[in-house]
Image 1 (tube, rainbow, N blue to C red):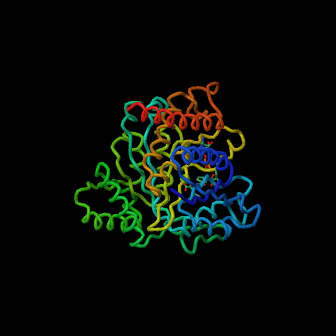
Image 2: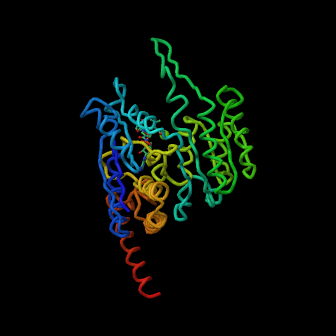
Image 3: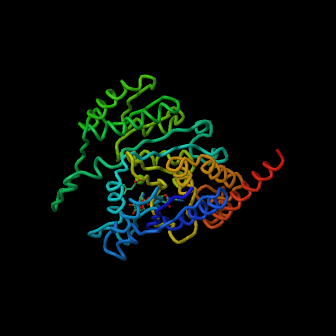
Length: 365
Ligand SMILES: NC(=O)C1=CN([C@@H]2O[C@H](COP(=O)(O)OP(=O)(O)OC[C@H]3O[C@@H](n4cnc5c(N)ncnc54)[C@H](O)[C@@H]3O)[C@@H](O)[C@H]2O)C=CC1
Ligand SMILES: CC(C)CC(=O)C(=O)O
Ligand SMILES: [Mg+2]
């Protein structure tokens, strides 16, 4: 298979975790005989420094011509408060690619259950996805913001159609899973949430086999900690999904574990870890690359239908976790922490050994 992938490392640890994505893709290419043409482009602070723009035209053009896009993370103190910010580049690319559905799976690796701050019994069996609306709501309001000396206003607006398409996507995903959808809103006070609920009820008519519950966001935040295994598919608006997914990441042991896929109706999808550029870790070779690497697996599965290749990556992550080659966020102690480079090396050899094992298997069966 031949595919073109634009990679956008971005800023901070985005660059470091993208090294892991590249290394893993390289092994997959060799092992399964694919050709991945990788084009690297700038976004965020790196792009501002060189061009003055957080999303240069050539970056967007490359993404639009690609079969899929991998993004690290953007942002950092260097650009905070500037007239142009790295985060504007991130929002702009999501908007331009129309990737309205951000799918964030939350599942716990067996060998990490003890690391969750939650009781092990509560974490066991956790396997849900957050479907976050990604191109509307507070982060995209027009006029985007209003600011006077003493007042600032952001506008939360949703059009019925924006709700219909994300809710439909969530129902479709729920139908393929345990058929339980939790719609999270704040319908007791927000007009947008009332419209959201109306639409969930309307779309439900086409998915009678899926059970729906409506949950207020403050309760949902609590329920995620109380009993995360109650969830199957959560669908929610942009900012609620942003906040709840960082919260949910800790069920798995670390924000560094979570991958995501940002999907459009029919254009290329964007795959990125849930975390940001972590300025506190940048340059220290200690970022957890699993969220990025698992995003590569999502890309292979969803954009290229390469199930075996995706599973090979997930298996390698599982094996590397099992052998405790992990960064400090999920290591048993600081002394036992591996570097990002160690983890990449372990992932690569694991993927290569898996290949060798597969070959022996084929020879002897
Ligand atoms: N998709 C993106 O590009 C995102 C960008 N950001 C940007 O990132 C910058 C930093 O934001 P923060 O609020 O600090 O969020 P963050 O997600 O970068 O970091 C939050 C905390 O989690 C830790 N962390 C994050 N990723 C990790 C990993 N892979 N391994 C181990 N620990 C990890 C960090 O060390 C930090 O303590 C800001 O400029 C923000 O706007 C934030 C979230 C998403
Ligand atoms: C710029 C922010 C909206 C990025 C973020 O936190 C996210 O997408 O999860
Ligand atoms: Mg976020």
